[in-house]
Amino acid sequence: MFDGDYFVYQGETDITQQVMLGGKGQHTEGRNATMNWDKDGIKNGGKATFEDIDGFEIMEDNGKLYAIIQEDSGSKLGERAMITSALEHEADGEDLTYYFIAMSGGEDNSRMVAGVGIPKGVACHDGESYVSGAHEFSGVFDTSGLTRKDELGNFVMKASDTGLVKRQQDRLVSINDK
Image (cartoon, rainbow, N blue to C red; front, side):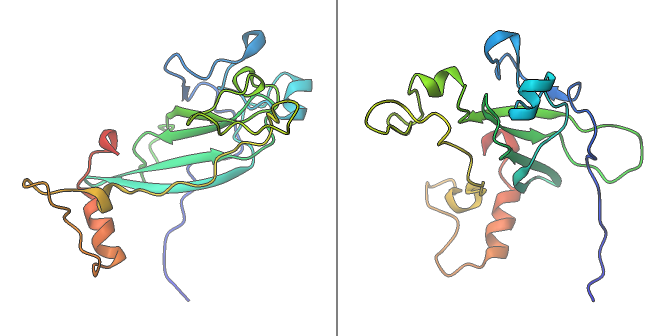
């Protein structure tokens, strides 16, 4: 048996007021990425919760923890990726803030329908038209510790270093520089 603590950061509750889009995440017909737009969401005016979280990774920054969240819900307008405000472990009634960082896929996403992708050429084409639903997030990995350099421009990590050393180096890189 392993001892440990379990924290629920977000239940199955409305997150729309916690999502900060920063002018991004805009959809057609006045919709935006504060809601999830899977097939049921389209019919019912959107879903106000996270749906089908497929990717969840903790990132560290100088003693603070952040979560990257990726959905894989079959959203018609694009899957959402968000980063949280700093995670806390206090019962103070403060909700997390979710900052929108990217959107992927969505068979009715206007960018996917037009064949736009980053990098160029990633939008799938079946020979006649773009297959706009064939694009999604596929996980996240913090590479900041692996690519961190010293003041002389040399990589700090060596090939023989352990995963613990990588995580220690990750912590030294600001969340805004990852």
